[in-house]
Length: 540
Image (tube, rainbow, N blue to C red; front, side):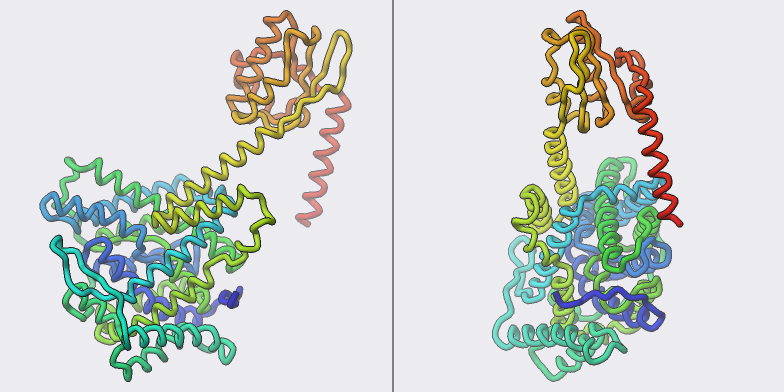
């Protein structure tokens, strides 16, 4: 819609400037997610530093940004609550489950399970990015509110800003979005996002009603400052692993899976935008190592951040340098430049994220209505709604894959055809066309009447595929029906993999397999030779 993403190669200058831009955008997000988890803002900020540096340096997707995320923060918050109820060790339990999650992710990568992300259908991907765009947009609305006090339970009371404050906020947001959109038409020497943040930051200096990061910190912590020394490694020794290992393992596994799914889905999206291909298993290893070290150094862990990743791509960041610069810049902000960073107007960062929302949403979705099967639309809407309502991206992807799988099973089960290709008083040959698996075995079995059939039956599988145990059992049951009726059922023209499956089944399938006739064998060899010749010509 706005030509936000251009497919180009990065360089050191683009990567460095983009990294600084991303670092600025990481600050409010990390702080907000820290509040969700119930920990000090520095816990989220240092998590973004460790996650960003390690995954950028060693991960499988250059240009992708990792840090503290909302999905991880929500799950980590459960560990914080559990820890607070068991000796006031909320932060210690977060560090413990994050380290466990890191180990699980490393195991996931070593087992090369990252390739399973390729099984995610395109409608699920569309629903994922649409839902995520809406969630990112809704998340920015919180910055249009301010804390006014606490209720009896200690929860913060929020209300919408109004009057000049709201007018200033909206005006600065629109200026930010306009600069990001129009500046590239004037010059591409600097990332438009960084220019927008600097310009709006200067404008806010003369506007008394402009809200900054310092105001957000002051409302939530009572102090509008941001500073902290580099953390030292500390094992969560106060955690009672022996007594609570089940809880720690359960929450750690949940965090690991949520992080892997979010990261691999983001990796796939960046692949499409840049027309390159990342390495999922390597990313799993890097994410695991980053989470383990994040927990060890007092961070709340995280995963890939789609918003910041898209900011990086839009700003020209393509290589590993962009993520490394972002992480190092954020560390410098925390330790040395806190007083300056907290003066950045929230409106500038909100405007940046709104442009990310516009660039993330798959606007072509509206064109698909009436042009693709209704079942595909249902999958897109289901994934989008689960993402928006539950704020659980892993659950949304699981629901989408499940619906797509059920749809495929239903459609495939209706496309099993049985026809008679030879009919004599002594022998009848049936040809089976389609996939024979758990969803189609009932349709297959209902096509045969053993009692009224002829003496010898041949089932031709030249255009069929035996897929699973249910298919083997259906063939075996059909053979049993014919034997009980005093008749013979034999198989012919079985593909090599199906023949291997039947041979391995041994006594489980007691049906004779006829040798393939010469014409069929020659045809198969000719087709295979033609395929090999075509592949050779394509490779050359």
